[in-house]
Image 1 (spheres, each protein chain N blue to C red):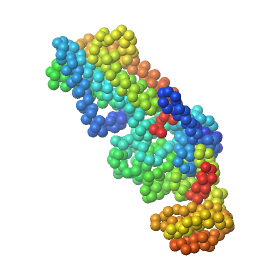
Image 2: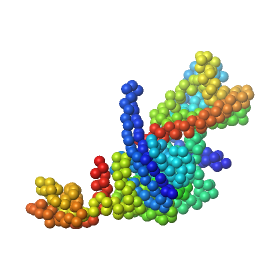
Image 3: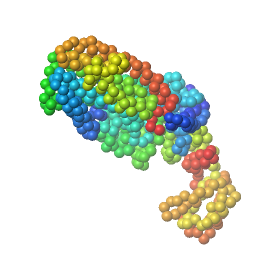
Image 4: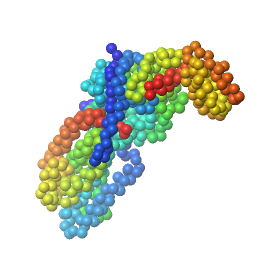
Length: 256
Length: 323
């Protein structure tokens, strides 16, 4: 119970930190709208309205991923910069439980971009997005946001050891758009890429969201998405102890 | 049994750069340091920048692994049992960093109360009590980015005490604080020790160490060069008196002439406003006033003071002789 409280309270306070910068706030408002506009303009050239709806949903998840991946990489670098990383490592609570709420808070901020993208598509581009199974759709969104948060956690853990690994998040941002089928169907990708797609939870989250929007069963996709997220959580937790020990050997917890 | 027990602790930093021809560099920050601190004691670690004070503290609070040697805090090995050590210690670093700027002081304390496993039922009362202790009551809802350096430092102290640690590590806690704030901080530290908390303090301010510490270890170039009570250190290094002569323009050749006087140990000139002050450390039992004034014949002389050596005198001599 105390662990759940720890995650919830730290998630809430991290969300507070993230919501208090006017600069970040404005960027957060504008960024998903740029994504959405680019995608809508690309797909409007085609004639199939189903593809446009699929692209709208894909663009909305792109925002969640981008907000989490780039921020997760740099999150621990900012903790290091403000001198709080050492305090987190030096705390008696399990370190992974202190990192996870940080990336979950980022994914939560990213969830706004889903709503913004869908509304932008509806009102500015006139894309009529009909969600045939709203309950499954909402659940699929929630599962995807959590899975992306946990994947961000895996990226964040690595930056405890390597000061420059904040760049990992940026490096993964755009490949994941493609590999997880946010913009183009997986069937359009080369065969050797597909196994990579299958081990990435956002692929299944994206698939579940689309299935729910179209009225197909989304439960298997959701289960796979959650299962992979749990696996990432486990790997991250096991890695965190070793990575922190390595950081203690190599003195990379502080800036100097 | 000592609360902190350090035996032959060493720490070497290795760094390298470049993809090709990686240049390896080794810095021996701590070289075989040993000391112990008893329960309820306030122990000071003094040394110049880069002497190894912070590295030593970081090994004791489990943020760095030692290269060799052993250290125990409250009977727990800092390498083998870091979690047990972390549950029982608090630490405060000097400076602006270590707080969430965009959160209020209260939210910072709430956050760290969770991190340091303060029971939820006790959090509110404990935070209120600490805000009172460090004089931040009434300002706790303001964002930290608007706090002065002194307020931040007091918030750091409150954070370090949230989980009632048995041992508190203070790494230059008064750095950058105004004199009034520093005095309040010293009072707070002294109160904590009076209530039974063991404190390990590093500071650059000699009067602070002299006023607060029960025992001091002077560290230079990664090694402990002397240890003892402040009085013992002053006695050990220079039992002779110190003569200070205010001069308005020290003539050429005077330094050499004073240095050549029998019984003059060291001579330095310090700039103090319009004047210069000739500081002469004498051998024990030697009176140099008339001889030094004789060397200054013709120069305009102001105040002449003889005093006992301070901890700072001892420190300068210890660190100087070790380099």
